[in-house]
Length: 435
Ligand code: AMX
Image (tube, rainbow, N blue to C red; front, side, top):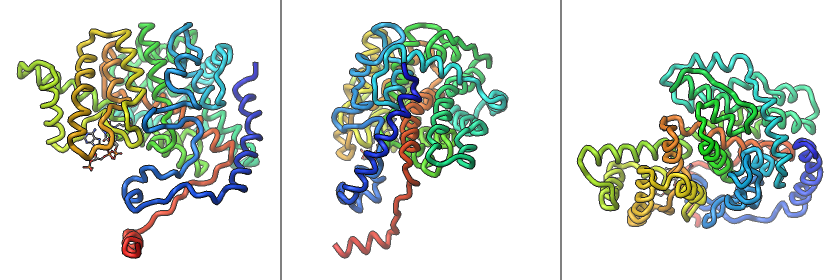
């Protein structure tokens, strides 16, 4: 069977030619006008970036290279027969748009394991971080510090730019391979004995779970699903966009993804998964103290109190989605199968019955439905993974697969520096009064 790099090398000339033709023959076709509202409203809905690894439909949710989450669960090889798809299989799909065979996915597992050794300074660096430094700050700093190992950064000065993609490929695969150990070191140093034990006889997720210190095979399955559903969400979200933007300066994949992680660390983006669990635990503690039952009425009261204090309900709403996130639904199905009686799962389910109605009544929320973050923490908690200020790191390990698979194609297609035009308020006023 061909290796991943061989498959990609064979695809590049045709894709380059197709893009050139599109640009040359149809480059002046318009894609819609831009309004003042969009310019001051966070660029919502402006089509301004090419992203091939996944696409987000507001109603249907995410498709990875055309496959929905249930399609991936059916078609991508798992670690065990009939089990959840593996991240390795998904990386293959995202990069090549082909569903790998089990043999190809296993070949990629072996390749990632072989690349997983960290540069010598990374472990001491992580051990030196203050214990109270947020895990996402540690994660972004450690990924940036691995840049000393970048083959792309060296190649920029020594090779023809047509060859740069090969070096981007090496860096990207090395980042995938090394993120789990970095993440595990941060976890073990902050919450446990600081020791990380690998098991390279397992797949990428299984080994990651062992390094974190978890041994339940059902938790391994959860991690496989978790990584697959968090991997990519088209290009406009802040972590993917930041990676693409920084990469467009020909900054190498390590620095580009460190930028993506910094964006993911914001509470309106990836940090929402820690916020959700915090909110649910606060709800549980306050009800217990007041002797209140957990039901729709009390949850509605708690939701209103959060909103009245000027805060958002974490895990609800989305900039693009207008229906329940299929990533939420996939996790709900996992919970119904593996932890139907978990008390926190019951709270999450009751919140789902109440919050969309409350947010709808506000009249301004465009999407009152839950997103991916509304569910993930409760699943992790069930298996004893309770340290919620760490959760966004797991998201960060996963998001690399999408953001960096696209970054590979950015470089293989030779996409230019991203540099949109900004305008002054005076310009906007001048246009407004002209209209
Ligand atoms: N709770 C309360 N108010 C909300 C809300 C929520 N969950 N979602 C949106 N709103 C409010 C907005 O704050 C805004 O209010 P304002 O006009 O007073 O500023 C108004 O509704 C309109 O916002 P919108 O157009 O519906 O959303 P948006 O595209 O601007 O923002 C998002 C999207 C996700 C930032 C927002 O829904 C939110 O803050 N949700 C909670 C945080 C969260 O779950 N983030 C994770 C998203 C998924 C991810 O990236 N991991």
